[in-house]
Amino acid sequence: ASTAAELAALQAQIEPHFLFNALNTIAAFCRTQPDRARGLVLSFATYCRSTLRRPETFVTLAEELGHVDAYLALEQARFGDSLELERRIAPGAEEALVPPFLVQPLVENAIKHGVSRRPGPGTLALSSRRDGASLVVEIRNDAVVDDRPPRPDGVGLANTRARISQIYGAAASLEARPEGVDAFLAVL
View 1 (cartoon, rainbow, N blue to C red):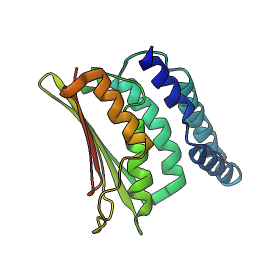
View 2 (tube, rainbow, N blue to C red; view 1 turned 90 degrees about the vertical axis):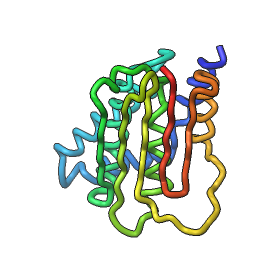
View 3 (cartoon, rainbow, N blue to C red; view 1 turned 180 degrees about the vertical axis):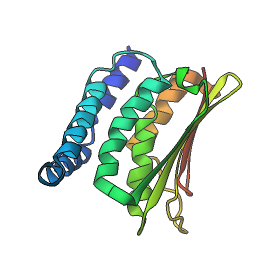
View 4 (cartoon, rainbow, N blue to C red; view 1 turned 90 degrees about the horizontal axis):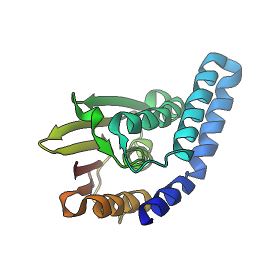
């Protein structure tokens, strides 16, 4: 029952700023690039549909990445050439079962606290591979590292860390490093 409550809470946490930014981005393309605007509306619908209808305890990594792709389509339209994407998914990793909404908050965190704060273009790299019975997912950004001490986890990282700890116990970890790397290791 607590996992279902956590999932409901995550679904209720759709970032209002993301929704407004997505709608404003789509509106900006309506007159100048109507075909692109239509594609973004479809990405937005896919994102909302997968956010609102995810009752499963686990989804395949491929399904989770579909949700992430819808999110990234909107963010890439918003940031334009300032957001470069790299994706490396090892063969066999996409079939792994993961809790829903596990990767998207990490990607959102990397954009919000990394790529969007760069003075120029930034790269978000998403990779996944099997390591024995484990699945390793890494989300890296080339954020500017400074001398400030690491911030405490925000809501997204804290929720993700708590969820994987509850599901996988000590066999799972999530690291957020100052150099803009978020990673988790979960035994599946």
